[in-house]
Amino acid sequence: MKKLTLLTLLFIFLLVTSCSVTQQSYSYEHHGTDSLRSDSDFKYVARNVTGKAKTTIKLSAWKKMKQEMALNGLMTKAKGNLPVLKDNQAFANFSIDRLVTTSGTPTSAGINATAITIEIVISTDIIEYY
Image (cartoon, rainbow, N blue to C red):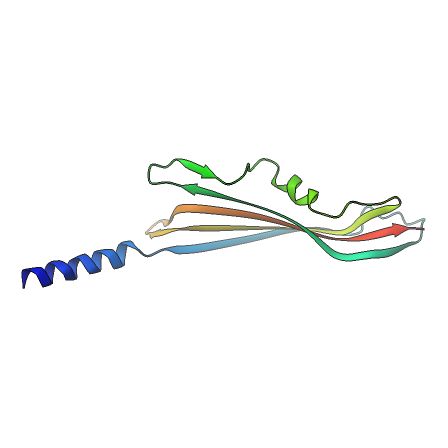
């Protein structure tokens, strides 16, 4: 009987402590046709091209940070994944999406984070002036 009670308590302890929660937040910015020259004709060369960059920060039990890539320059990396512009071309309708995913265990105050993932997605159109 003692073994059964001990196993039941152990099972409940493992069940309660192994719960994990994932929380996501999303934000964006949109820059329309601010940079377009109104005195020139243009055509769309490509629509909805994207550049992405992502990093994950993992917190160990000792609160040491382990990171997959440098957080500094995440926007630059995403822009670098866009196609290279040719002569007389420009980006238009530029959108920047930022998705932050936090994983961890639930607490009464929120989440005790074990991993944070930040992803930047840039989408834009490419136009070409005549």
